[in-house]
Amino acid sequence: MTLVILAAGLGSRFGGLKQVEGVGPNNEFIIDYSIYDAIQSGFTKVVMIIKEENFEIFKDTIGSRWEDKIRIEYAFQSNKGIEHLIPKDRVKPLGTLHALVCAKDYIDEDFAILNADDFYGRDAFMKASEFLKSSSPYCASLPYILKNTLSLNGGVNRGICVKNEEGYLTHIDEELKIQTDGEKIFNENREFTGEEIASMNFFCIKKDLISFFEEEFKTFLETKDLSKDECYVPVALSNAVEKGKTKIKVVEVNSKWHGITNREDLSEIKDALKKYVEEGIYPNSLI
Image (cartoon, rainbow, N blue to C red; front, top):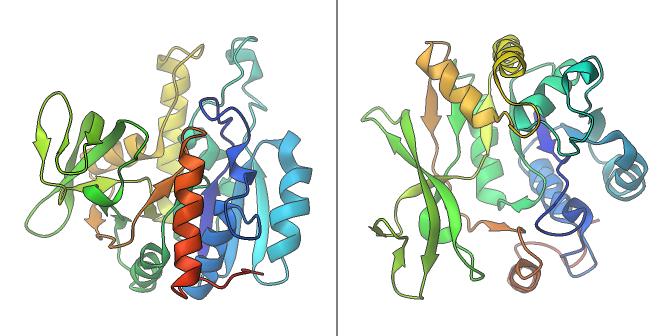
């Protein structure tokens, strides 16, 4: 089974390459925990999508730690072949859909995909593994209970998932600047129960959708402002559902999500990982 990790982001708000920021007791990265959980859940291959100039960093750290335990391949998100379309002053990558299209030659089967700088927890990987092994003809979204995705350092934007009676995703409501005061969860529009389910960009995807994604990316290049716009995997998946290409099964995750958006988030995730080690969920040293 293949796990695709989106790791080509610039970390603009964080102020650095947060994919290789030490957060574990022995300076492990979030990616290390994702790969550890993937191995524990039966995954056999990891495709890391990175910027080519960061290859040596990833190879010398993550690669050296894991390549004798699981097959690791590197795909580069680049503008090769479309350079003439991109404004010369654009530095930011074109988005996660572009990243996935760049990795198409490394994907030989149905796969799971997630963000490099998000900590998802073992439950998510186990459920993704179970779904992929089920040979479902459809895709899956692995959303989290909203109260398990909040930050102590300010408001967060979340896509609130709505599903039908059969458990398939019907739509996602984008809610901005959701925050908590320790008791209530709210934004300027509404108050939340905390039991809503929020997409955290962890999906199981059918390999045969990649050709559809290529067409979606081509449309993006032809219709969007390439000086600033980005194209995203969740939007392409939503378009695939609308066009009858697939359905998306909602597989809820019980783990607590942790992420790094700002520098202030570092202490929170370090404390959480220390606690998980103390509870025996993870070994003190992953390697």
